Length: 402
Image 1 (cartoon, rainbow, N blue to C red):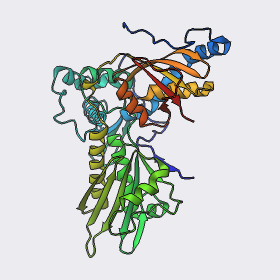
Image 2 (cartoon, rainbow, N blue to C red):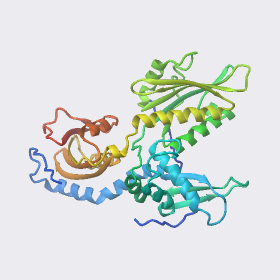
Image 3 (spheres, rainbow, N blue to C red):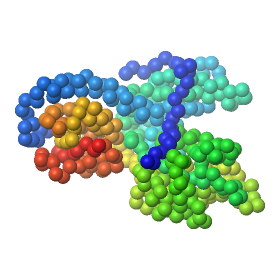
Image 4 (cartoon, helix red, strand yellow):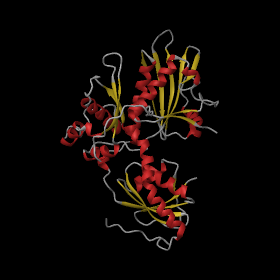
């Protein structure tokens, strides 16, 4: 049984973090006809509907927690007490770049508009809390800032700034460090005992956090961890086969090696995507330099591939989902939680329960084809062409996967 070692892109802060005050306050569609959709639903279904309606707020809250991690930013600070406003604005610009999937917000269309300038200027309004990190040397002090996602996201949309939606692709990292005849897989216990391995891991975590790209590693207890990386050429076919049990969205594979007779690090990397791959080489004075450039380029490619400009997907109205194989209350909760986590979904409302089927009214900034594409990327729901309820226009027949 294979498993991955997930690396949270945004580590939790200590409980004793200093807390700041919160500045910000907080159609004509008809239902399709389905057999038995409006008959009595019985005591269990009534209780189920009531329980779900009471718990939807908490479900949405737990789903939002993962996305809220995107809204934590760390920036330089002068160290002067009360001198936070400019740092908050710098943090917000950094956050806007992360949300858009970019390295920097410089030159981003929308920031120079009145709405964009007003948004950045009002950054202190959206700070939920912050933590001061005082450095020993001048210029080392930093502010760790958490922005209020619920208050800020509508303003970002109103300014028509681009948003790289959730869920973002998880990157499986298969990088080997080579120093002469010795080699270690980045993230493995053996690599962690080397300065180069520790530094490579630190940079991977840092870029993962800065760019909002979650990373994971093989379990390192399997024999196949270096499969495809044990020859002069990166064997993409073998790497895909070895990675298949982990079911990653993308794979970063390659090697970081000290050049023969040199102190420079050389990099050979492949980014394996579901359809095709990208390869490149590079070199730098330190392992941190080559890892940073490699991960930044990977994030650029992933953002370009998965990112859709929010202004191209305005409200498409209601979609009605008939979801089968929903056998328990836990199945209902899992289904609702998953739908609420999908990017470009505005609201999810349970309409009817009928046996092992549930009818859901979903409002989104995406059409039916776009929703199909989103669902196909996940492992929670799948289309159900054999459903007894033939989907009407504006509806979609699905089934809950085990």
